[in-house]
Image (cartoon, rainbow, N blue to C red; front, top):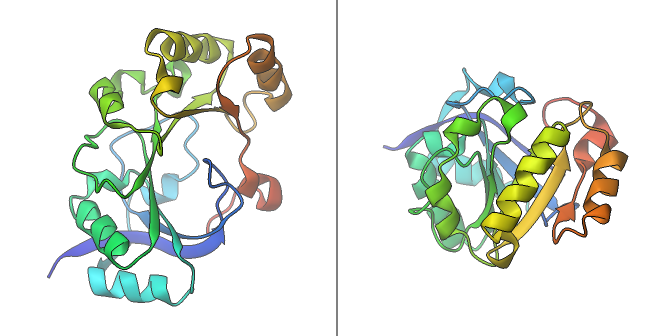
Length: 213
């Protein structure tokens, strides 16, 4: 029987992506091969509880919410994540996947909304970007840059322009929490007239940095 290692399943408001503000059930898978400097889910690197697909779906159903976010850690580090997302889609949920961009996304069910990072220089993990993933993003999907500094911003703008990313999917610039001033980032985006969405993390504004939100 197929199982996944799960750190937590909880109900909250979506704090990021184009779905921000929507009541959502989060399924946080355990494990991640990356170590980004700004990571806020280090508790998901290890531990967790083995759960069957049936048990996960039962717990999700108990929240009576049709919006699901599969996250981590890096959820795609567990092969069973692909089957889980397909099962959730088959059950009629709207499913989004938050992924680092370091692992292949081409086998993700096409019904899933992809929210993929491109790691910036100050993330410490830029070399892990799997750039070929970009070709698999479509109009429903989102590409996110977490900006830690002006250097990160300039690099992200270069990627945006050179690869015409905004013509493929929605692009999000998000300031690294307590590292890059959000107002300053907003002013850069406006000054350069970028075709991106600037976004702060709603859940941290509401509840701060803690688990289960």
